[in-house]
Image 1 (cartoon, rainbow, N blue to C red):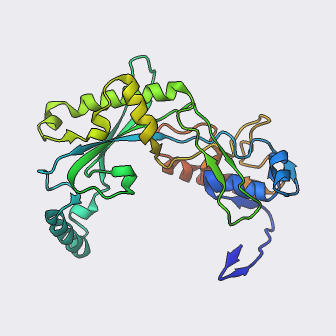
Image 2: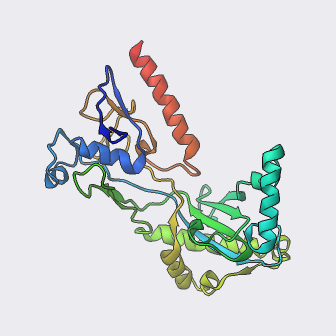
Length: 300
């Protein structure tokens, strides 16, 4: 590892636990010679163990956002003179008593719904945000408004993580392959329609918000599908690239041990064979808790 400009080395007495996440754990395995043999040889990396599933089966929750303009709703977050005054007060409230508008998590409401009656369980997660979240917050939106997310819970599409080079400082090549399976796209189309139905109910419609043209212009299924293809993004829940299982394309076993390698486990969301139907933070914490139990048992 590199620290303070110096390259240092640590040796483990018993086991190594790799916990770099679904994008970097497979990269570190491959840089260490554990992964698809042909790919490693292509980058001049000596093959320690040919494990073809490393970096495969990457998936995530694709998410698309509808934006609503509501310039008269000054109590929402936004960019305006009134907002600047309220945020300044919010800073003082937070510093004084840990109260006020800055205690919000911004996504103040949400829900799990089925995109159609044919679904046996909720396949969509909705998030309601008290501000206009343009491009997932990467861009500033003037004025006030609110946003609504449509997130697909069980995508069928699968991507991959590959090496860009043998340089450990180079980021890996990540292909999420969103919406490669047509079923994913169609469920998100139905989700956008259901979200609009919810936002058109009297309690919300009476707020007077107007859907921004970027999505409002998409009305037919084909137009909504094109809007989703153009604007869907990650909701930052990547999993599966070091998948758990007994098969030839799996990376770790039920004890989180890397197949074919002694003294090495992967402990993060990359081991999930299939993504959870909801946020991945708590399940990933539980993977770590389970790993502690496994380590204690193996040391007993």
